[in-house]
Amino acid sequence: MSLDFGPLNALDLSDKKILIVDDDPSSRKLVSTILQKTGVSVITASEGEQAVSICYKDPDISAVLMDIKMPKLNGYNATISIKEKLPKLPVIAYTAYAMNGDKEKAMHAGCDDYLTKPLIKNELFRILGRHLK
Image (tube, rainbow, N blue to C red; front, side):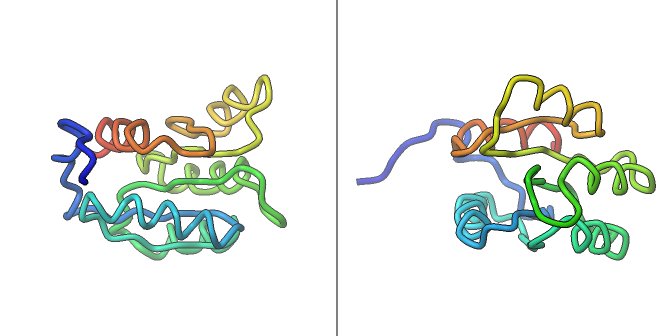
């Protein structure tokens, strides 16, 4: 039995590259698997400093999915560093720690959008479609 997600099945990101930043390997794998349906190229980073370095070195990155709570350099500070040099690169915060005020803190740090974990596939596709079309 196949699930019909309506027009979101038609989301074609085959010409895009997304960086997934998350310190949890199972979360990176899950998001990568979900994104495969769009044809997007996926690269991953396990912490903020690595994400900043990748963004600075790879001009083909189309968007960043940034976990907020990570050891060393957290998602807020990684986003600030990325946006200093790449202000037009969409950074989408996603976090399991959705406390009151977290969305505002993410947006203040420069994130372009905000998702909570567990990710809802259609919401992820809708936000990516909005930023990458």
